[in-house]
Length: 134
Image (cartoon, rainbow, N blue to C red; front, side, top):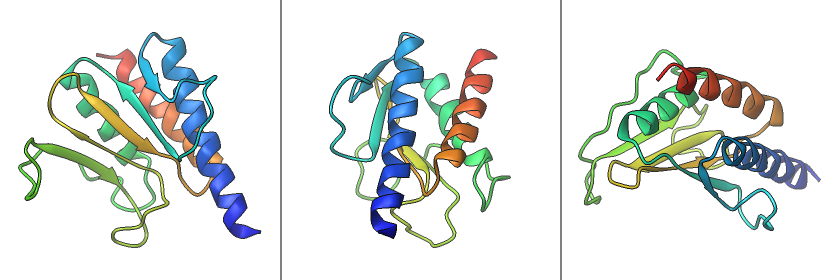
């Protein structure tokens, strides 16, 4: 039962981001009306600065290392610089709220829903507030 609950929380968070950013005119995948088959939502920013600030906003509401400022860097194994935001309790956790993105056009962030929908709501509020100032 717990696994279904966590999956539902993650899916709801991904759907929330898809809906909110789609309403603001960003291209999202899946779209809010699409069937979600994963806990990932991608948001196309079309702008490097917006992409980076989005990832930083997600990091800033993380339970661990919220003070950290993610920077794009040349990560081994990737062709482009990559930015990653994840304040997880377990290094390499695969279910907590996180996002990452290659730094290349069209500047797409990949957000993964987290353990609780409420954390997703807080993250969305922070992301929207941050992006409204750019």
